[in-house]
Amino acid sequence: YPLASMKKIDFLHWTSYVTIIAVIYILIMTIVYFASGSFSPQPPIAFNTPSAKSMTTLPLFQNAFCCHYQIANVYRDLKQKGETKMRKVTAVTSGIVFTLYALVALFGYFTFTQQLELNSNLLDVFNKLAGDVSFVKASNYLMLACMIAHYPLPCFGLRRTVESLFWKDVDAPTFWRYVICLIIIVSTGIIGSFVDNISDVLGYTGSLAASCVVFIFPSIFSFMVWKKHGGKVRLAGSIVGATVGLFVMITGLSCNIISGAID
Image: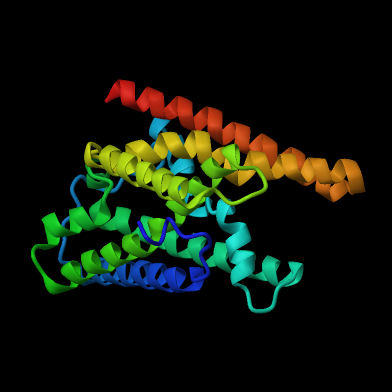
C-alpha cells in the first residue's frame, strides 16, 4: 500500500531483478526435475491436438508483455535517457521474458503434461507431485517475494489512470490518492480470494485488456503519428499491429468462452 500510493516510482530495476531471479530459479528447477527422470507423466504427452483451448494460450502469453502502462516510469528510471536506449531496453527485456517464459512453459508441460490443464499453477503441481522438498519451498518463497515486489506496480499504474480521469494536469490531492489506492488494493484482493484458477482470469483479461494494451492502442498511436509525419513502415506496422490485436482479442475471448462452456 505505501509503495502503490507514492507519487512516482523510481526503483523498477530492483523489481525486475527480483522477478528475473525468481523465474530463472523456477526454470532451472523444472529442467533439473525433468532431466532427473524421477517422474511418470500421466497422461502421456499429446502432440498435434488443436482445440479451442489452443487459442486460449495467446491471451495468457500476452500478459507477460503487458507493461506499456509503465513505459514512462521505465524511461524515467534510465540513467542515459534517449530513444535509442529505450529501444534497446525494450528489445532486451522482451527477448529475456519471451525466452524464459517459453522455456518454463515447455519444460513444465513435458514434465507434468496435461495435469497442468487441471491446475495451471506450476508450483502447486510441484508441491503435490515432488513432495515437501527444500527446492520447491525455496521457489514458493521466491515467487512470494516476486509478487510482493511486483504487485505495487500495476496498482500504481491503475491508480494514476483513475486519477487522470478526474485531475487532468495536476496531481490528485493526497487524501484521494490514498483512498483510490486503498479501493484498488482491497477490491483486487477480494477478487483474488475467490479465484481458484488464475488462468481463467488471465484468459479473459488477456483477451480484452492485454490485446488493447499490447497491440491495438500502440497501433492507434502509431497511426496518429503517421498522419502527421508519414512513413510507409509506420503505417504498415499500425495496420499489422491492430489486425493481430483484434485477431487475438476475438479468437482468445471466443475460445475462452467455448472452453468454459465445455468444461
